[in-house]
Image 1: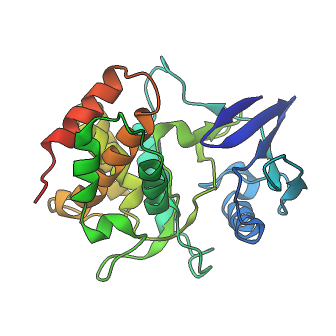
Image 2 (image 1 turned 90 degrees about the vertical axis):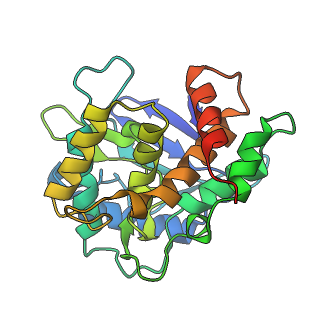
Image 3 (image 1 turned 90 degrees about the horizontal axis):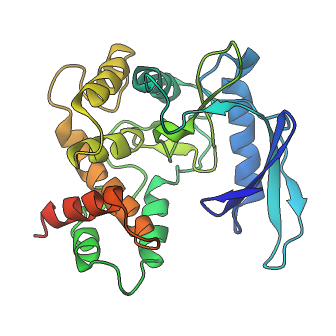
Length: 266
């Protein structure tokens, strides 16, 4: 068993059992499972389909938790050759155009993830993280904003959220933060990490070009994408830096903290 983002992952042969983080709403989780089922038809959709559409309760000393069952997939790992950035851009564009789930009334969880990370910021964390967080604009504190597109959003996209079964194409995995809101949130982490110098230009360009070529609505088709991405890219970097502050700092964490230090504070 391994733990990731408050969830426990148990692998049983070709089945992955995910015990979701404490406090997960089972009604909302069931809605997300049904959306993933609709969008993962025959293994060719943009989302990986679960094996069941209803979460099952699990007793836990701290309170009731809920588990779901999924097919086992290969994920993008360190040292993976030819990182599938273009596939990721295409998948996100398809998700953002999906009609299924567009009116579910559940907001995606990206903004809430940032708030949770800041609530658990250690007292000895570099002060620039708190200063950057305090200066985030209002659009970086909510799932969607007036005048912006409103679509289905993954809510926690990074390259590790791609998975595939043998002989099948990549799909998006992990629906814990799936919901509706501004699709730019799904581009925020790659954009922020690119701006921080953690993603090479070629990878970022492949990702953005594939997203635009597939008609992704989060950014203009040809004009400068940065005005739409910048506020949320800042939030993604702040969230990652705040989460990383709970561990021993590595080179990535140092770059994230340095990026926080370069953010405007007025």
